[in-house]
Structure formats: C-alpha cells, structure tokens
Image (cartoon, rainbow, N blue to C red; front, side, top):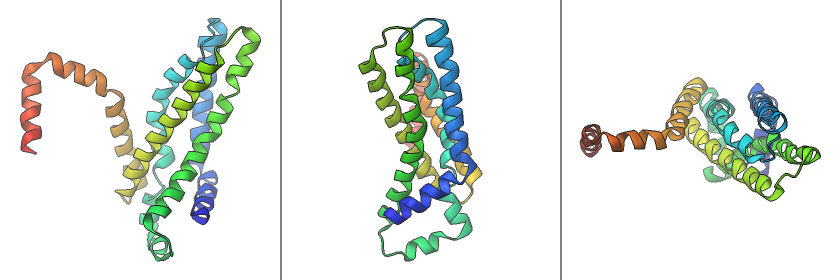
Length: 196
C-alpha cells in the first residue's frame, strides 16, 4: 500500500488539481477570515469554516476526478490488477493520498486562529474542534468523489457527476423542507421511488 500511496501522492502533487484545490481553499479562507474576523472584529474562526464548506462542492470534484477514472481511461488499471495486492488496498492507498493532499491546506488553516490571537481572545478549543470536523467533512466528500471516479472512464464526467451529487447533498435539507410542505409533490415522489 505504501507504494500505491507514494505513487498517487506524487501524481496528485504533480497535477494542477491539487494546487487548484489548495489555492482555492486558502484563497477563500483568507477572504472570509479578513471579512468575518479581522474587519468585523469577531473572534469565532468556526464561522469562516462554515462559509468555506460550500467551496468544496467545486474543489473536491476537480481534485478527485482523475483518481481512478484516469487509470481506467489510460488502461493502467490492468497493471494495478496484476499487483500482488487486493483491490481494496490499492483504493485505500489512493484514498490516503487524497487525505494527505487535503491535509495541506487544513494544516495551514490551523495557523489562522493563532494569528487571530493577536487581535483578541479566540476560543481555540472550538476553533480546532471545528477544524477537525472540517477536515473530516473534506475527507468524506473526497470519498464520494473517489467512488464516482471509479464508476466512469472520463475524468470530466466524474467531476460533473460528483459536482451534482455534492450539490444535491448540500441542499438536501432545504429540499426536504420544501417537500414536506408540498404534500402533492411528496406523494408523486413516493410513488416514483416505490416504482423504481
């Protein structure tokens, strides 16, 4: 698994998708931090991470679109099958490489509450607890992207499908609220789901 992990990590760090991901996360985190914390003189860093979670609907599909889809497209998946490793180990190596790439901007974000200490009292336990939850959210979204990447040979198709799935998950709470208020639409959807 170490060989797969190292190979995939090198591949991710040699592609522009990892740099786009890290740059987008840090750019928007910096903008939100300046707007919410420094200009508004508000000490709670967790609100920056709350607003930043929407960025992952765009950034995660770009990061994960070629993880397995590129192997299927180029035919290198046949080489992976010939390795004396179970397929689960290969997928875990790729997943841990994604987790490492995600950890890079999250580690930089860990410095933000320390910088904000210069401007006042920051609840560090809350900030770092939210940062841990934020990292786990990123990893969960990356696992969805990895699954979708394994279902198609086209990286752009994997990115588009992952974007749609993550967008649906992001708005699922408001969709369910609107479905609860409309009984006719709920009945039609229930019948459609039962028929499927």
